[in-house]
Every structure is written in structure tokens, then in C-alpha cells.
Image 1 (spheres, helix red, strand yellow):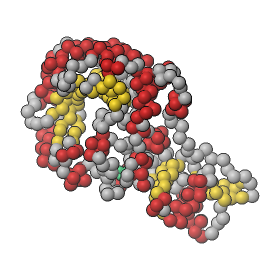
Image 2: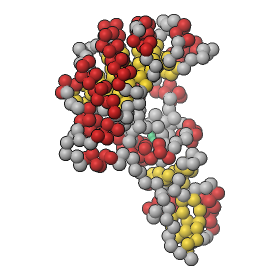
Image 3: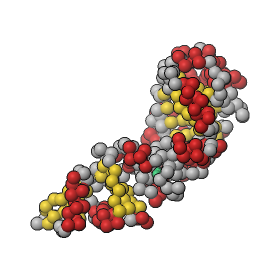
Image 4: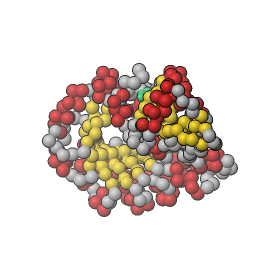
Length: 376
Ligand code: SF4
């Protein structure tokens, strides 16, 4: 009979081979354990031998195996044969390989299952190709879209187009519509009758200075976003909002923000990361794709991109491509939907790379991926 030291299948392992270090993440209770040197070597062997190795007891091995057992990370089992552990294998986007083999880009009905969100910028800088946008929305009727964001920058001059868009989204897509608009255009938007017949929507009102009427805080379906540039702005809005029961966020102009302010208020500390609870599904997703970007198409200035910031051009609206082709191209060619921390420095060498939230537009804007005090 042999004795085998094994890790449980719900344990995820992330290595930093350069520093001879690894992280064991218990996906059941979200506890995290870092191992170094000799213990790292043992875990590496376990990992590469399908989650179990032969166990020979000595003082050192006993200390390690006790630690594994006492923290419910694994244990020791007696068996003649090597135990079979259903260790974690990623099986996300299994369709991707299949899609690559298709000869026609608009083939395969389930391509639209990969479309989750549309972000439509309406800024009036160019004549908006409304007809083409409406066609895309109609074509998305059987997609997996759960949210459409309308980012409105010039409501006053584009009222007719915007209201037609709102109605078509409401009629064709059973999803949440989020309208983001500046405070000075907001009153104009809600005074229109279009929104009154629509149920599944919310409005994000951007507030850049003190010049707003506090009464709107009592309106339903509204969230406020205060634009801030430094600690003074932040403190100012926080003290003004203290006794108000409202939902609000802050939006930072990262490129112009003071680095000390970011370090103090935005950067993740080790304690923040140790507190994070990431489901097994999210942990595995972080190994493969960017949940913030995946499945999103951005329509801006009559062009379609795969991402808001520094996105790759997928097509122009006047090329009249079918939605299936557009989603296919975003999926196969752009690979920005798959921008994960394992692909960027310095995160790729960090053991927290699958626990940290996915790379965000903020980080891309700032051309910096370590918004943390872990690796500088
Ligand atoms: S270096 Fe990257 S992966 Fe590591 S903690 Fe910082 S942000 Fe997260």
C-alpha cells in the first residue's frame, strides 16, 4: 500500500517560479496561503503530477502535510494506485476553437451568444448613422445581451435620434438600458415622454461641479457619478453627501490624477487582496478572458470597436456587416477580449494575478496595470 499526499480539487494554484513562491487559493472559503522555497517545490510536484504525489513521512514532510490537512487544502490517502483527483481544468469559451474552423464568418447561430453588452456613444461629432445602429439592435434580438449603455454627450441636438434609439432598444432587447448623461442635459432628457413608458432603465448622471440641484437626489433609477481629480474634490463631495441616502460613485481622471492620491485611495493593498472573495468560476475566467471587456462592442463615431479605451477597430458602420460577422471578428481577431493579467507586466509574475479584478479601462488609460502596493 502506498501513501499519497494530495491537494483537493477546489484548490487553485498560482506560481511565481522566479521567486520560488506559490499561492494556494481555497475556492470554498476564499482563504489564501503563500508557500515558498521547499514547500513551493513540493506543491510544484503535486501540481505537475495531477494533484498527488507519493508521501514519505519525515519531520519536515509531516509539518507540511499537517498544514495541508488542518487547513482543508488536501490530505494523505492510502491506496495502491495513484488517486484520481478532478483537478481544475479550464473549460471556458469552448466554442472558440470551433468558431476558428468555420469557413464563413456569419455561419453558426450561437456566435451571438458571445455578445453581452453594447456601449453606444452619441456625441453628435459626426452625423450618426442611426439606421445602421438600429439594424444592429434588431439583429441582436437573439443574442445574450444583458445591458445596453447609451453614453449621451449632445442630447439637445440629437433628441430625435436618441429617442428613436431608446424606443428600439426597449422594443427589441429585453435587457437593462443604462443612460449616462451630464447633469446639464439630464433635465432635458427626463422631460421627454420617451422614458416614461420604459421600465428597465437606469440613468447615470455625471456631476462635475457644485452647480446642481439637490432635488434630483430623490428621483428614482438614478445613480450619480462625481468627477474628481484630487483629494480636495473627493473630500468636498464626500462631506456634501454625508447625510444623503443616494447611490453614488466617483470617476477619476486617472491620466491627470496625483499618484500619491491614487496610492492612498485607489491602489489595492495586500490586506484588500487577502479579503477578496473570488468564486471558482471567476478565478478560472481570470485565467482566460477579461470579464470587463469580453462580449462588449463599442459603437463610437460610426465605428465599432472591441473596447472603450484604445479599442481595436472591428468595422465601420457604413460597411453594413452582419452582427454575426462583427462578433466573430471581435472574438477571433481582436484578442483584447482576452486581455488578462497573465499577459501584462508586472502582473504576470504575481501570485495574485487571477484574484485581482480583471484589467480595467482605467489601467489601460494610465498605461499601468499594477494599481496596487504589491509590486511597484
Ligand atoms: S501586481 Fe497586478 S496581479 Fe499583482 S497584486 Fe498588483 S495588480 Fe494584482
